[in-house]
Length: 261
Image 1 (tube, rainbow, N blue to C red):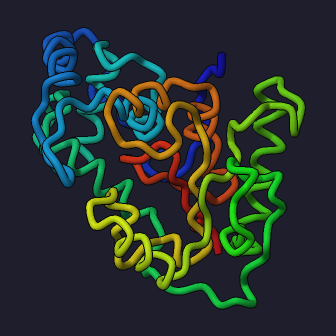
Image 2 (cartoon, rainbow, N blue to C red):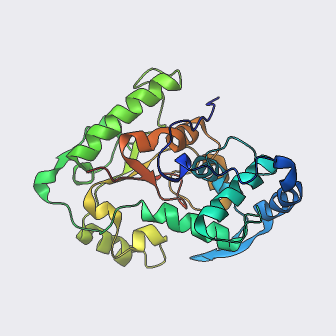
């Protein structure tokens, strides 16, 4: 099992989120969080219920290994709220959750651009989840692919699995998609998921990778994402991907974007 450790994490995780140094002050907030974790109503495309699917990312951001039902976690939330000028309650309510989501979203690829052909390479099919994937769909930004290879090599070592023998985990599901190909997805299935329907997809850049972390590869059903966010592969990415220049799209456990220069 991967043990999450956030010492040396960058960005908000470096900030002192402890609010008072006395976790006992946050027992009541912890009880509220234990309820909201599964019941908080909020909207992201569609109606959402709870924030339990994002606990690993929340722990990373708040620089804590404490469980979401704990007073220590609530204290970290209060510290975040203090820094952001929010009411310092320790409760991860809708306002605080959207503030954290805004932070996550700010770290993604911006602006969206279409990759130049010279910036792309055709990656080996062995790096892909689907061994029958079309040759035109194996393209990846060169710099992003180099970083990806370093990342999965280290992941294999950390997860005690030999490189190339870990099955489909951490293999690429999807990488560069041209605007024309994206348009063909919309035409083929007007009711497809949001990623397939996107008019300005980060996949245009060649630096967005869908990476297999378990379950059904790219299904956003809550029950599927609940499986994905508990896998060793996903937990390792949450802890380490930023060291290689990758940041997540919080809503899709498989979606990671290379944002380094």
